[in-house]
Amino acid sequence: MTTVEGLADGDRLHAVQRAFLDEQAAQCGYCTSGMVVAAAALLATSPAPTEREVREALNGNLCRCGTHGRVVAAVLKAAAQHSSGQATQ
Image (cartoon, rainbow, N blue to C red; front, side, top):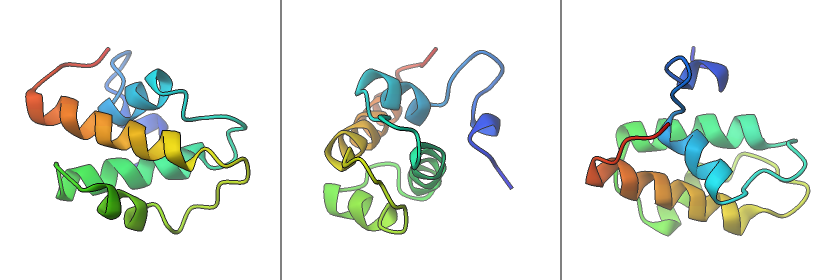
């Protein structure tokens, strides 16, 4: 089982974690762990998902403050960075 803490490699954040920070996708933090882990699982099986696929993959996570737009943008950004080979820190 992988947790949100287990996604990072030491001090090096997973692409999804970095994108969540860059896109300010975490507001209250209620859903952040679940969204990040679900997004990382999606990218592990589908490295270049469509917006619809991202929304479907995250559908089971309840976001109380409404940051869905930024969350989707963060996942798509992580996918783009991953497919272009950009490293994260």
